[in-house]
Length: 425
Image (cartoon, rainbow, N blue to C red):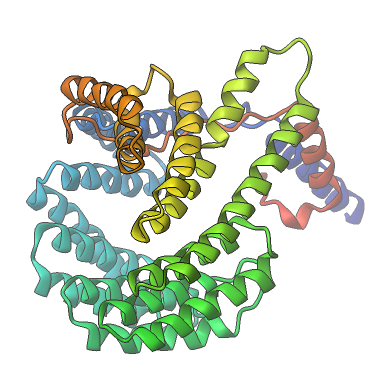
């Protein structure tokens, strides 16, 4: 009897290891079809093709109604509701979100879907401009996170409270936002791990004080965010560079240009070092048989943050009418962006060209400035301001799994079966 049980357990462990290592080969056809359909729908939504996304999600909903897995229908309807929301078809989105919330509330088991339902409705109503309804659902969602059995730790409370706080900030109800920021700060203070959210929260809290004119409190928080970033991430991380920029922006807005310039220079140094390190890693790992132009293009694009940092520093010099220094920075920034964007993305260059031309005008470089002005005029004639939008769209793809990954997954599943769920009977 014991031998038979051991044999069954071993067989189950082996099947689980094979299923994971060869994924998605052993997945049911229904699961593969649903995953493919929703993946295509989400990519259509991400690319802005909402009509196609609606069709695909509607197909997924229809197929999910006959599925043996009830979660398929919920996921498909949720995706469809978000498409409706982006299409401003608020009543259709509202019906789906309310159905989901009602099902979650009426479930015999406590669940986190009640919180999700209230958040979906809050965001919908806020998008629609129904602020009273949005506030009610934000508050109810926040109350849900007080259930420590469903929401262990305080992460969900912090994230939900920030949605509500930012809602208040958008309505200029700063007095109601501040206690939420303060309580979240006290919670984040307890987490000093490498992934701590404390620096970002300090920066956001500083902006709340800043917009209210509480400059002394804002500066203290900006400086503390910088100290925490340096402690958690080191002196040369992108997080630290961002903290320098935020503090520099604050100082510049107060007219403290010398201090702002020094902070921007320190941020620029971090960005330059980060780019150099990245380029060195790419160059070492680049195989001779690969296209060298691809590496060159990759390096050029990677240098754009240097151009952005140079522009920030140039603005401080311009504020002080130090146009010779500003022109040198604008020139270098433009060279970086032209290498990266070239003729293919010339519409992106107009502002950088105009800024450089303006600096040249200030130092009597009229001939070169006139030539640049002509380029700017030609670009803006072809691409009028506001006619070109730059947006970040997410594309979901099936992860590529190498033979090495599959081998190690198989071995891990054999040696550590408790880490992997088993579908075997």
